[in-house]
Length: 329
Ligand SMILES: O=C(O)CCC(=O)N[C@@H](CCC(=O)O)C(=O)O
Ligand SMILES: [Zn+2]
Image (cartoon, rainbow, N blue to C red; front, side, top):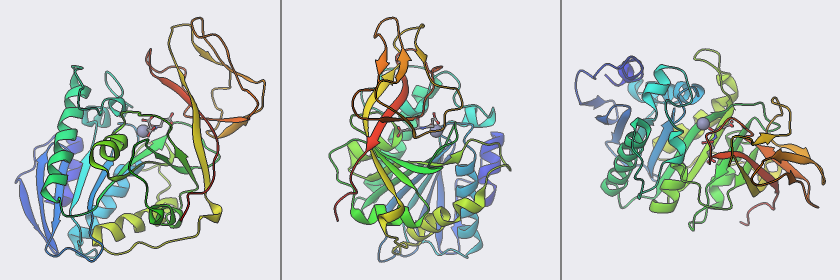
């Protein structure tokens, strides 16, 4: 049964059957942590929706949120009106409550990937699952919300990263996200090979990485703060128009620099508990590196997002962002 899927997946059990009926459609398992829900009837606003969670294994709030969504569909309180592909990303890491096992899965979503290892294999499986899902529903608009939580506190606890790609984000997305309690948005300035970048870049989907609070173990998440987000996922699942809100409360930022850890000697010159979006003034030294030298803030103040000096060599150690204008209507 669909309701057992989350528990069974967490425990590494195979589902007893590969497909089943729902009050308003049916479901089919396409592999470990990959399930498709198909409606009997597509709603007026039905899009092909991918909702992914646990791309990082210790980010549990999105798994609980997806669990609530699926429970509503199974109980019949939510009437399916759009095809959904629901994904739990890094299953071994989810079972061990850690971000990843060997390498960060969320940097591997590129078609030319030649890396080996379990995260690379999983990235290939997920890319194939998404490709096939969008091909099965080629007549519908495409959407992907990749649900995460952040390692640190944040001046804006709920925010989205808009991946860099040619596809424009429709203005309605911002209004829906504002109504769903998203407080800030970050526009990426270059390709990043994350899961949401994959679907935007290769499939022209309306895609975001959503940061929904701070990492916590199962049972310790503030799901009350995520009820407006659940309402957005439910509206999309029902194929109806989600609630909109004005953008007056939402702050927009653009990535100006990406700090990369290019040597063992790389250090960030900020406190370990610096919240995301903390601003640093001109002249502040943010990073020291034997190879690249010091990174000093120039004339424009910069805010730090996702600072993490312990990332793998060659990986992103922080995003440095500055305010940008509200997207045009
Ligand atoms: O809090 C952190 O430092 C990391 C939180 C996280 O996993 N963020 C994503 C963002 C992906 C993106 O840039 O779209 C990640 O680092 O993969
Ligand atoms: Zn994450």
